Amino acid sequence: MSAPFRSRGRAAVSVTGELLVTAGVLTLLFVVWQLYWTDFTSGRAQAATVDDLQSQWAVSAPQTPGPAPSPGASPSTPAVTVDETPPQGDAFAIVYVPRFGSGYAVPVVEGTATADLQEGIGHYAGTAMPGQVGNLALAGHRVTYGKPFNLIADLQDGDAVVVATATQWFTYRVQSHEIVRPTQVSVIAPVPDQPGAQPTQAWLTMTACHPMHSARQRYVVHALLESVQDRSAGAPASLAPVGQG
Image: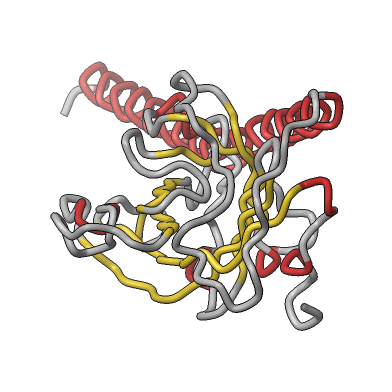
């Protein structure tokens, strides 16, 4: 083999090696951006949205409170709910989950498009609004973009999921979990997993990708409305840290 040929071969190998190293570095940078930077930026934006909502609600004109459910009454006919569906992308509620920590508060935005889920927890269009009979269906990232449902698999039966609106607090209690295919949309039916059934209760369904770092399946949690409380009465007892409520 001639010296020029060996030289050209070494040069080709060197260039290929440099390209592979560069590709590896770019891939690593993308992973860091996807997993960490989007969490940081979206987390800050979502916290700011929560602050904005709370400020707006604090100065909004008082509304006539609906009748509080009597002790032992079924929550299937809640008092007052969000009456109108907000425009896509607008934040209209805040979700609190004591099991996820005392600092957990994430805005709910209308829609489940990619851009919507970067802003917080997405509300499936056409499903019930907070407190309404039917199924309040929500989607959230398990990783990236603030990962609001990162710990969804840690929820236990009986755990509180509290949804706050401008006028009320809605406390739902976890009833069941399931893992399904992405095409199994019956989980967000008005009566979960019973398409066509007439709802008589107020459900909340949370969905997230499963397993972690994959979109192959969906992890689903169903919760049932337990109580409704006007904001004028203060925060509900269900917001107490896990083990203290």
